[in-house]
Image 1 (cartoon, rainbow, N blue to C red):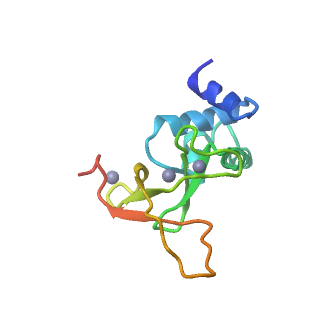
Image 2 (image 1 turned 45 degrees about the horizontal axis):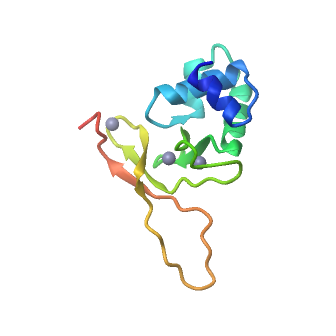
Length: 138
Ligand SMILES: [Zn+2]
Ligand SMILES: [Zn+2]
Ligand SMILES: [Zn+2]
């Protein structure tokens, strides 16, 4: 069993060709991938609906999380190992959008600061992103 197969069984996901392929793409790249990018990468073997369903089940299981990038498109990235579980995402890190290569990175080591909100307000999700030049481009 390779790492991707191992992860799928850890997260209680049945091993299908598409799931393995999508997961491998996430493991190979250190930046977030959009549905369209995945389609470009593995679209010859799997149709868009299958890829979409795969992303949906991965997110539901706590394996990947979605990110809204500056351009307004949705991207996905692997969650930190053991950080998230089913329907319980704990991705409280900052996302970095590179203005040079256009990629989005998870800065897992940089936590979103705790916000103190006025009484009566309850935040369910925080979106924190930084924009600039990434390590590879600078
Ligand atoms: Zn997560
Ligand atoms: Zn870059
Ligand atoms: Zn992230």
